[in-house]
Length: 430
Image (cartoon, rainbow, N blue to C red; front, side, top):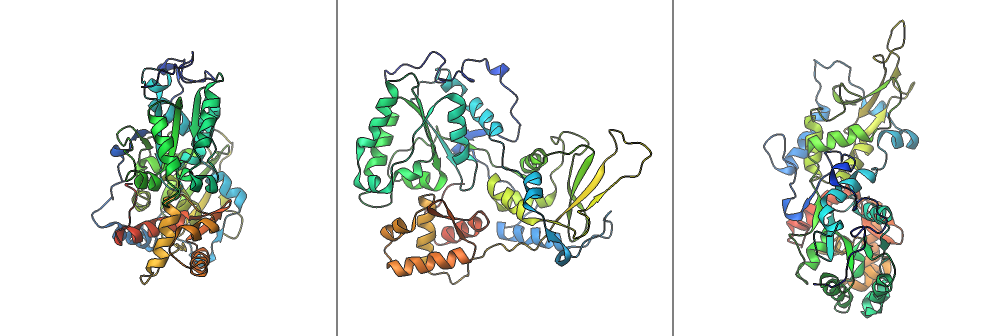
């Protein structure tokens, strides 16, 4: 165990939370919860059936016409996409304060020094919240963000990059954060030395106290190379229909005296109304949101992407209807209809997808994205073949660029994961 002592405010150089009693922390929304990786629960379906059947039911449900609907259905072809400005109000980016508060609670004993483990791990799924969360959490606590080395350094196995941890320990702030461990290795005979050294020194306390974020696919891969502390790692508990409903409810940027109804475009039924007659905690999850949560396997990031892409409006006046009344009061609302369409162009992989395509997709997931040069370097494929596959996947909406790296898209992720699982590739455990 490391002899390195923790700072006066526990392991919180900024003194933001760790020196405060737990009961004085702000209340964390109940839908954000960090649990051990082994306790992650994939959301259950609202009815029996395989996952693929449930997703088919979800789409069929949107097509059904219900004679008892309070509002008429809309012809989906006549609906139009919402503006980016309106979408940014209906489905804004997740506020990192809420998951950061939940992470504070999960790490409370460690942050105040009751837990002597030198390093803790946070594992997240692709398109989840953790890559953005950990830099935010580091700033909140005055911790040092450790940027990943460039791929050339990783391939060289240059352990000199670990010296920056020693330099940090010489200062007042000893807490450090690595946002994404997936960018500290390459699946190559020469690309694993650095990550092994990093993990060995971190877990023995040689690098001081730190928090390491890791993509779920990299976590699965590294578990075959190193005794990863699976029982100690934390992850966001899966978003079932209830959690997803509360997240959507609280995401919307409210406007005074306006109620937004999210309605099934096929039958006019309400899926969600905001505000409702409460704060969202008592809102029952609509079966369609339960199925969406199950299809996304509890991943809030991919679920929000599906939801955002499915929203439509009418081509006339924006769908806002003033409620009749002689005098405006707190109980009177303008009603806005936002339609949830079934006509999503979810990117699909053809059944005859070859192994070369599977290799490309698997490499992108194991590394949480790769630049073109390194994708070619790591795969046993000719350069032209790799580039042609990458181009086809990009045109199909299965792959996109994020910075200088290609990644699997949020809408394409579930189909890609299913393909790789069917073909017995290593997948994550979520």
